[in-house]
Image: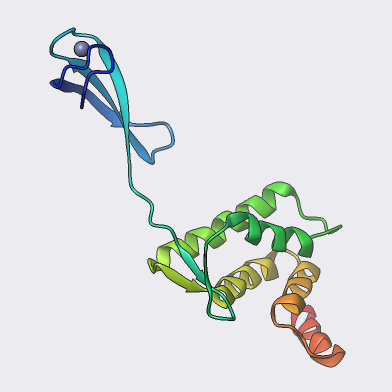
Length: 149
Ligand SMILES: [Zn+2]
């Protein structure tokens, strides 16, 4: 690592500790030449997750899209912004712990539904009706009955 002050090539790590977010390592370094100190952060390189859509096209995973779907489902429901944020975090944890580089959009939908179900029944049915594309009122009511039982 080059010294940012004098450009000297030899710098040494004098201290390493986890950064506040615990997802990176903070290193204090000192330049062997000018003896000035600076800090670097080491992070795990994140591999972009690709979403396989219904038409088999791929697009990069986008948290805001999951959030938007959940927000729509929770419109005028007694669900706080914090609960929605927690739900999306839980969904992400599950998606990323699978460890695959690609995931079907329908698999994400199923995970969201599972989490919504325990949060708010109406939001769940709304989300499910969009996601599963209920063909008619009776299949919608069947799903609603299942939740309400
Ligand atoms: Zn230096």
